[in-house]
Length: 237
Image (cartoon, rainbow, N blue to C red; front, top):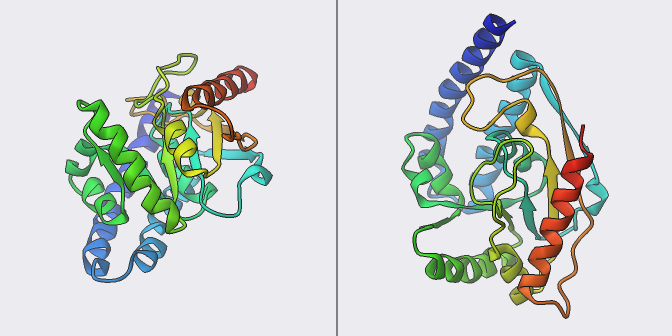
């Protein structure tokens, strides 16, 4: 069984690298075009990876709560257990950009391609500056109709564990009035953080009701987000 997982995971990464090279070339070629055109083309790569993951590693997913997704731009706060959700969220939600650590943009191929899609790249060593950047740039992205994807725990945590929830997403929501959508999932069960192997199975994704921010402080909103996500995590298989 382990040999099969190694073979399938290796083949998955081979396909990922080859197609990423193509995506990078496209990103460079399309750079002069408006964002919406670049996005439509480049977003096909993570969609292709989801298909490849299913075909090679037999890893699929199910989503409950799609009816909770607002029609316009939103602030999506998701559990962070794996590299999987960074791929899958692109298909679950519409036009989006991501809050990420700036070091990811330095990763050959992947980071270079991501840099062309309007990410909010922050320096996590400078908390106050990062918070200001998220609120200022996030406001502009939301006004353009682009949803903001934030992993409030900041880094991937193992299944059953919980990181400290950053207040940045809640602060952005209270300052802009845009809705917050919480997301829970158990991707870490099949694609653990910093793991090479991909286990077959079905990842469960839960999208929660919009969390209202009217009349609430960022601290209160953040507590509601954390409460919903962590309680939902306990209900996942």
